[in-house]
Every structure is written in structure tokens, then in C-alpha cells.
Image (cartoon, rainbow, N blue to C red):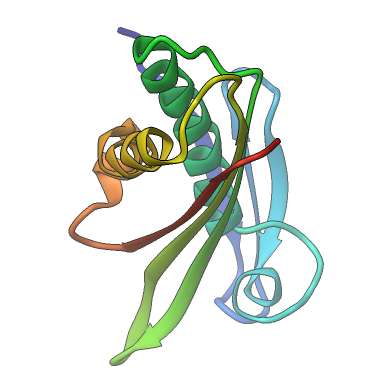
Length: 143
């Protein structure tokens, strides 16, 4: 299996500095700052990247679980919200909230909920977070 790479650099002090990152594919890159991470300033931040990773991973993993159950989905859409909070003297990523909407012909709600919950525990990015971050799930079938 491949190993994926990224890079980041930071210039200056915490509040007045600035950073940038990029992935080896060239598909992701951005600038970040104290303001974009801990306030409402423009730019991106590590939490946004983590949320994107979780949303992408979860959508793929749920698609696989549904397909293995015999009901290939037409669409799985996942919104992820990653929260960082002040904890003690530092900051900690405390919560990942997943909102999932899926269109799966012939799928019953009970089976869908079972698979959605199992995927929350089983997708690789979730596996890296479990035990450190509270993962919340709101999953439902679309008509």
C-alpha cells in the first residue's frame, strides 16, 4: 500500500506568523495562520484538512459496506465538522461531527443505520481518531 506525503512550513511567531502546506500530488495546498485556525480569519487550517480526510474516507468506506450488503449506493455525501477547543494550557481536537446523506435504492433504514454506525468505527481515518476524538454521526437515507 502507498505512503502519502505532505509538507508544511511556518514563518514567524504563533500569532503573527503564517504557514503554508501542500500535498505531494499537487492537488491540495493552502495558507494558514493563527487567525484561520483559532479565529474566523480567512484561509485554511489543519482541522479543515482533517475534516476533508474524514469525509472522503467515510464516504468511500460506507459505499463499500453498502455494496458488500448487496445495495450499491447511487450517492453517499458526507459533511464533516472538526472542532478544536482550548483544553487546559493547550488546544485539542475534540469532536468530529459527520452528517451523511445517502441514496441507496432498495436499502431499508435499519440496515443502513447499522452499516453507517459500523463505518464510523471502521473507516481508516476514523480509526486514527478513535480514542482521541469524539465522532458523532447523523446518517439518513435520501429518497
